Image 1 (cartoon, one colour):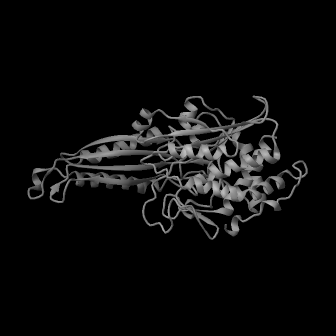
Image 2 (cartoon, helix red, strand yellow):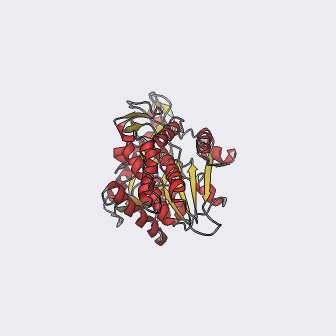
Image 3 (tube, one colour):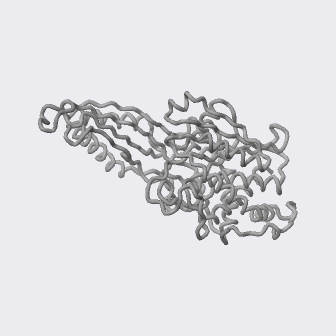
Length: 428
């Protein structure tokens, strides 16, 4: 064990919760931190690459680990036909319900983290599924985003039950497996099927900020059609790649215009567009007859998604029309709306900020983020939510979606304490 989590259990103070509730919560978490780290390692060691998105085995393993803590995880498998039509292989979402009093006696607070992750990619210097600990940091895919918050939320709940022992309200753990594809078969599926309706919710995030707003995201697949021909007689064909380049140039010109638009939400700058994948052609000696590319358009909270999509389609179709023989098919892959704060999230923000300052020794701002998350699906249904959990100050620092993703174990410890303390206040 590293110094960051080498805390002997028998050194935990025995302060009574009534005398020092926060100190007692902190002490319980310190005393059980080795267990929390091992729990996270076990979660990281089960791959959940999405695509292909075969995530049911991870849910089974998670349920097994939770059972060792006395937690019965409800398993909610999404029908195979829905999952496969969505482009994934299997999804089983989990709910753990822990009531602390009569039904309706207090708030129900949901804690949501997602287990699906993008594939590791290249460039790793550590095994992406090894959960190796070096210099107080755990390396591996999803250590920071967001299997870390499977651990922080689970152990915050365990500390709450062991120390604070609420007498009203409830906590639910929502562990879902569709964030990378948009969340509609993760939290969206649980909510649509009325399997849960919490009063407040917290979703996986980073320890040094409370996120109250985020960008929306439009993803589209554009197929550019031309006409194949032998490269020796290119005039007999229509080059789909040249058509695609013309369309891409028109889209990138829009990107320049987006930089002139500023969001009023702290932490969010301006809209932008990224083309993340392109493929086409059949061989080097063939004029390509078809080229496909996928784009990602991030929308600031002030933008109207319907207008954004209509404008993107207009730009693509107009550029295609300027090239003889070129036609396009445009398919929407994802429309994730922006998250804007609900007035009811103030108790969450206040509690997390108060305890993050106490635990971390610094002010933790309430900001927006250019990411998009599952939280929007709760907020769209009128459930106030924020993003807070275990992680560094920035996505860049975490190496999320890059090689050598890592989590500073001090951030895991701190976030667990902050969430436990906040839950204690909110359920008092």
